Image 1 (cartoon, one colour):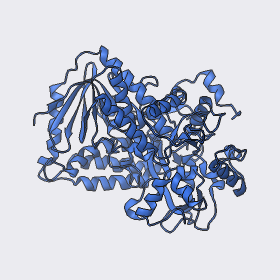
Image 2 (cartoon, rainbow, N blue to C red):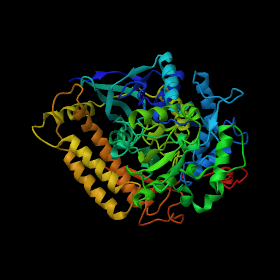
Image 3 (cartoon, helix red, strand yellow):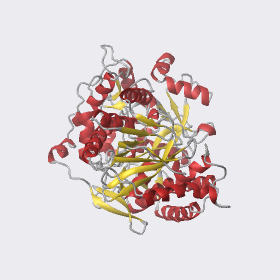
Image 4 (tube, helix red, strand yellow):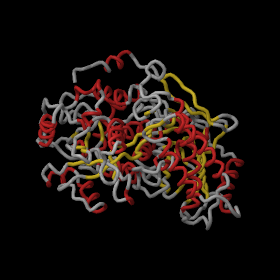
Amino acid sequence: MKPQVRPHDVVVIGAGGAGLRAAIAAKMAGADVGLVCKSLLGKAHTVMAEGGVAAALAHVAPDDTWQVHFRDTMVGGKLLNNPRMAQLHATEAPDRVRELEGWGAVFDRTPDGRILQRPFGGHSYPRLAHVGDRTGLELIRTLQDRAVALGIEVYMECTISRLITGHTGVTGAFGYWRTTGQPIVFPARAVVLATGGIGRAFEITSNSWEYSGDGQALAYEAGAELIDMEFVQFHPTGMVWPPGVRGLLVTEAVRGEGGILRNKDGKRFMWEYLPEERRAEYAATDEEAARWVTALSEGRQTDARRPPELSTRDNVARAIYTEVKDGRGSPHGGVFLDISYLPADTVRRKLPSMYEQFKELADVDITKGPMEVGPTTHYVMGGIRVDAETGATGVRGLYAAGEVAGGMHGANRLGGNSLSDLLVFGARTGQAAAAHAAGAEDPYLDPVQVQSATADLTAPLERPDGEDPYAIQRDLQEAMQRLVGIFREETDLDEALVRLMDLRRRWRAVRATGGQIYNPGWNLVFELDHLLTVSEAIARSARQRTESRGAHSRLDHPATDDVRWAGVNSVITRGIDGAMSVTTDPLATMSDELRSLLGSNDH
């Protein structure tokens, strides 16, 4: 079929928070913008960021500043963050939140009417502006309304399968309508990737079906670099029962509001897993932790230290995994998360989504008893290498923002930083893409590339026999979960790479049955292509980094090696022969002014 043609100055691929914010910024800068999403508008993974958006507004803690937020982000990321990105994020997040409020976002309020903020793991102060435990949903609603009001053209249920390139860089994007199978091509002076993460590469994940590593793979195939792909965040608390909802996110807001983690013996175990160098930051007893929770519920400051459950996500996830592995887990292979000691009306008011989620899906009333939770694949800190100021990749005309981009979060992301990340860098990237488009020449779409991409669409349907895409997906997820999960070692990673090469061979002979209209098996073929690419990038990067840092834990290299690996990014590139290679590059230089903030103890 001959592709439809829809030209725009800027095409944004992905309509979650980052994509919407980039599209809004580009439109407000005067560009003609097309916004492409492979699901429905509003059906974005941003809604799973439930607990809040991190910004140093200082409404609850007057001593909070962007400098403390910067330090928390860098320390949480084990100093592997791009320091300029972390600085921009910390300084601009408050303005982006206030801007969102001005566009109609309805946040919870302090008694005097300001935006309320709650604590989260790794943050020195209560910093997360929130709407109960539905913050991401409110953010998407607000941005979606703004985008529609601006008249941005939206292409729903449209999958992008290839970027078109030329001597000037990226010149457009090729895809197809999921409803009809009809191909469509978007000539563009600039393309912004905002497609989110890679969770579907793993068997247990909080991510929805859209998260198949599309943007990372598209950029890699177009010649961009990927960085730090070994750093995959396993959120400590996903549902573990019943099986049909295994991995579904249990927001960190439960722990932020005072939720306690216990093993099957009723023991509060997180104190045993606190890093030695950070123990002084956490409550030393149940009584001190209780004082902190009481002060939080009453909206006042206290000298009590925060509970151990608010350690960073990588640490809590490993602690839960270890408790279960050592036989101290709950009946269904997790641990218990309990907030039922608080007044029932407080729990229902602060955590309405979690109350409904457990009541409806697990027949558990969280105001009367504990939840069962365990780690779930949640977020990838690595991604496309971008310029801190503009979101530009190494390929002219190609930009990236949000989870698909690497650098901001280092080796481990703090909760709440994802929403402020997409607001800050979505805005910056959209502005930069519009500025580039204003000075770029008309895009030339190489007909050979368009014809090749069109042929790729029909090939799986024309094979008389071949591999079942669902069987490949099942084997991929099993291999990644078992061999490239929370704890890794060289023999497992070697096996994973062998398995991935075999799965790639099988994918080349994949066959889809039926037609092109609403055919999920046929759609899966192209998503598997991307999932196999990002899975190989994760495994190769994890094998190369012979240390444990942040979310990357090597059983055969349990120590953090600051001599060899401090300030070093893993870099994935595609060779001329199409083979993937992994190398290292020094981290971007940090200014003396920023470096001085890392040693500050005045917070």
